[in-house]
Image (cartoon, rainbow, N blue to C red; front, side, top):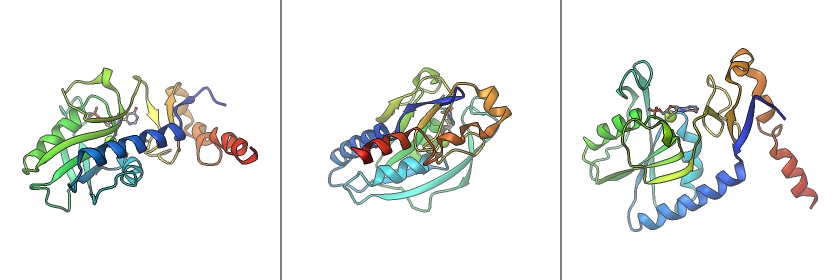
Length: 204
Ligand code: IMP
Ligand code: MG
């Protein structure tokens, strides 16, 4: 359909994997009530789908951060723009991330959370760009390993756009997309590749 980007993880694979993650988390935290924390904005789409696959009385909360320069320049240090509303002291915390890249941001964030004396802190990331890791980090729950390419969709943005693309796309020509940010419009809901699948399913 387009040479600018291609689907690397389709919506049906995302759905199935999240169902598995939800089942695993449900088993691991049996009898407990974890707080799932999403870092705005990328992780919010994943969080919304993930919590509906967890059969536990979970709580959710959000944090918003801003980097001092790039992740690498700032060594991951961030300014907390919006903090949690809940006290996580004594709670089981699961940080829900869209993607872990260098890991610098997340490892800093984990140190901030750990200073508040939670019972535990684990990470659940939909995508793991493990080849790019700088900060050693244990990610307990991973959706998919991610190649070292720029990905967009399912919460991930290109210049604040395309978070609502239902599939995860690998951008193959970033220069072309930068020159014309409209190029990914064919991947938006009801215009993307899966509309063919829906048609096929409906007629079968
Ligand atoms: P890092 O792990 O500290 O390098 O930063 C991870 C953050 O960078 C993620 O939470 C995303 O917001 C962003 N990020 C990293 N890789 C990508 C990508 O391929 N597409 C969109 N955002 C990305
Ligand atoms: Mg993020």
